[in-house]
Image (cartoon, rainbow, N blue to C red; front, side, top):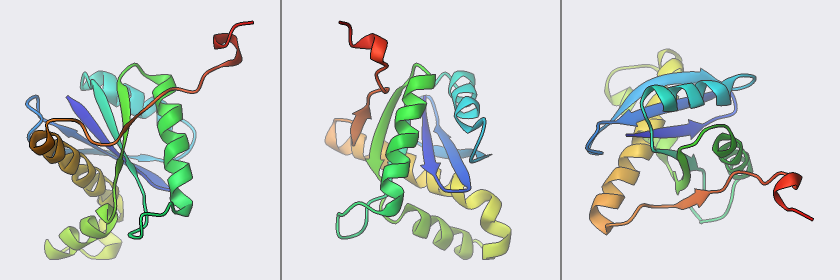
Length: 154
């Protein structure tokens, strides 16, 4: 089982896949701030997640954005609070695609706020699953938890 994570400034969208890694579905929108990492770690435990796929916002040009560093930091902190592998994957246009899909389903921007992050997380996870099936290897890069000074020895 894997979880997809869409990190935003106000909310974090969470999605999961089925046991066979075929289809991603929405799970929850977690408010960003105190307790967000703990809640995602709880969801990872609840769903027996072996991997968390965190979207890395990269500009269309391939350059990093203001949100890229935030997503990297969030992924590193997440890697330090739970045992599953955390992987960063390119999430270009996932939020745009999520808004588009919600509009196509008849939802307005106002009534989509509570679920757009979950839909973006579904898109991130589904792209990762599809990539892995076609390429035969997982996408993105594994995030190592931050090392504490006591890990470094004398």
